[in-house]
Image (tube, rainbow, N blue to C red; front, side):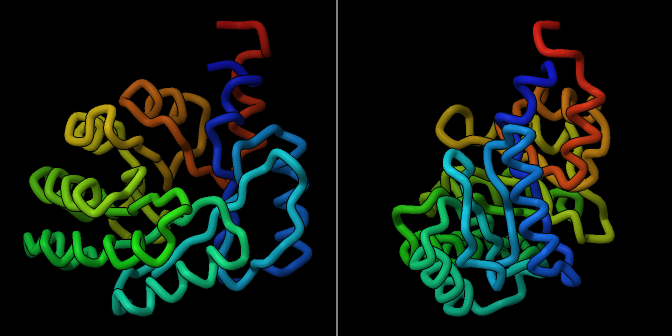
Length: 220
């Protein structure tokens, strides 16, 4: 994937709790300059002025996922009212570890119903899950009406995305849902590995450095 194509599948991400308005504005400007697909922000940073052609995503239940479903739904509803294009929600990871996939499905469904017209990505925190739990959580997200399953928040001590997890998620959801890889993707080689495994979207905070590590436009 060359330097022209890569940004088109990138959610340029700024989710640090210390992020300021000035940093958000700079991240939006950088995303637009790089040709990123979207910018992904904390919900308290919206509404925010966006340049034409750049999508806006916010996180919900982030980063722990240990919020009541009603709270996640309220966050999603508020974000939708502010005109966001996409929502990246965190499941209750403990429920997935315990195999309570009905609870995971109900959690995702609450957010889906609160923001029915917004693209919904479901963060399963794959590095903290067994293969069986990755499959179960992905199936629950699909059953609840999600558009994407997503690997990681990037804040969990177990780690971020892996090609193995992406491949397993893609095998589970097939072409019915898309897969987003995020967390720990720090090089062009990392990005290539994730897309080769089946990811169609990448969450990156070091987008410029990763794009600059890609082949020039016109290379294959």
